[in-house]
Image 1 (cartoon, rainbow, N blue to C red):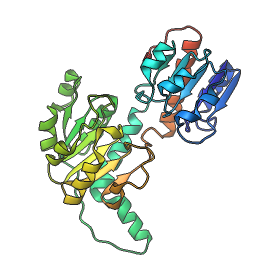
Image 2 (image 1 turned 90 degrees about the horizontal axis):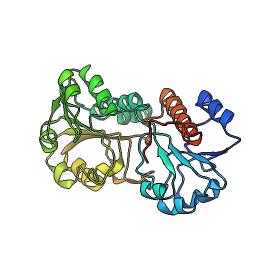
Image 3 (image 1 turned 90 degrees about the vertical axis):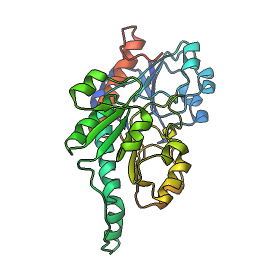
Image 4 (image 1 turned 180 degrees about the vertical axis):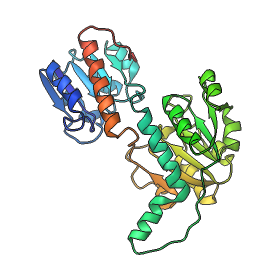
Length: 317
């Protein structure tokens, strides 16, 4: 078996157990030579003779899949999202797509809370100024006891809720597929989206990227947020209108912004970067040693299950 591995964080050093399992199964492993998620034109030459592909945040378009060899039987996503995979084209070619739900939930929830604190207290800006010889005096805000609105009460949203309750935050949640029993057991108040946005001091996004969630926080909704709100997005960049975010930061409507996801990645010289109450990370929510090892192992197990004809519980198509 020839296997292509393209996630930049799946390496022998970072995930030795998963790499060992894959090496024992595969006759040949081809790695990502770019050191970054692959663009459409980068991929076809790497797929020659490949039976299975462990894929990161690569652009797996219909054009890529049309040029894929007949040998390719499975794309095992290293992560939960699959919006960069053309599922219809994969199904048409008889290529199975799998993912690794839940394994990075705690890592992303940790980062979401870290971004809340960093944006509320402008920690990165203060750090830069002190290291440059300054001794600034700024006034931040506390998250303790505030209203937290969570958009998407899946595994990550639940993890954020648990952490926030340690800060005595009052947790509200919007989710089209609300886990009512979990919310009731854990003191989480379900709300409709616009109602939640109007009363939340902090809003944290944990929804998938779908046609229904695209630009969910558009200019109109951003304009109706509670003044001084802190927004956190560790999900997908396409959920928010970045131009409207910049305008709301300029006006003071948004008090702080923490982003781990952008509409275009990397984002280049984003207008959001000129505000010192904006804290950004490079889509690093799942980049912990524990999450990387877990994602690597499950992506390998999924790939082997499909290629050996065994049941795989994490099929997307």
